[in-house]
Length: 368
Image (cartoon, rainbow, N blue to C red; front, side, top):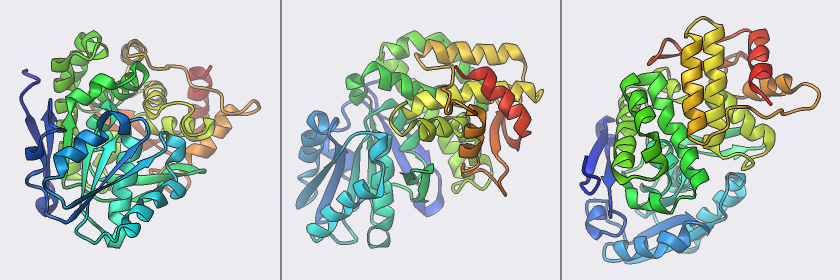
């Protein structure tokens, strides 16, 4: 695959369908944004890490299209995914007298994308926004599908809205500036698609993991495109997570508990998901849905990607109990019953409950 060619994956949602453009050099090109809605103002939302790298480049590309290009630079980190930080976006919009045609641009990783999308969904009851993800995790997962949210001290992504972007621009060149830890975190969301939907892709990831870790452009281009294709297929059938879309949360029930239990930002989201996938696979095995060699295969791949495969203890007295308490706050829970995304045989996933006693066994077996 030639990574210099732009490829497009479409999210099919009737009148809310939109393209995901994947390629190199897209960020700087005015034609990348030419077909977006016309407006007099645009607001770029980014953070303190991404702004020095890409803010002026995106601003230059947009200046011919919009009379005024505004910017807001948020603090960087999951711990800032809060009401207080969200209000900085509203302050900028209201302070500049923005109207309901103003287009928001999310320039950054998953936190920036989620918060910009939520601001766009809420400001004047909905304004257009564009995702310009600059991390692997955002390009393969969080920028696609219209989930927007902020965190609450009691639970991750608990306050938000389903709100689709107009456009997603995945410039693969932005991945060159990712620190190794962030690249590994993004690989967790790439790996996720294999066990739940596509064993051929899982084989490919295993064969090409060294190239991905070395930021090989052709390998990254394929990983981003195939991940987006799988997510587009799922979201096109179940936009609001009534059923099928929940499989995209493989590893996330355990992972979100790790994030909120340790304090947001202590582990990166992808690190928590990587470890959460090991725990979910182990639970799948103990329920008789998948065999131990598959669990070992997945665990070895996650470890090779530079991700943790042993969970942290969240309490000195009853760590498993703390996990269970946090997981009951998961959005998939029903009537206090935790629902897990499990591997229902390699390449397939199912959402189902498991006895607390068995979940406790898995947590004790999988935690340091």
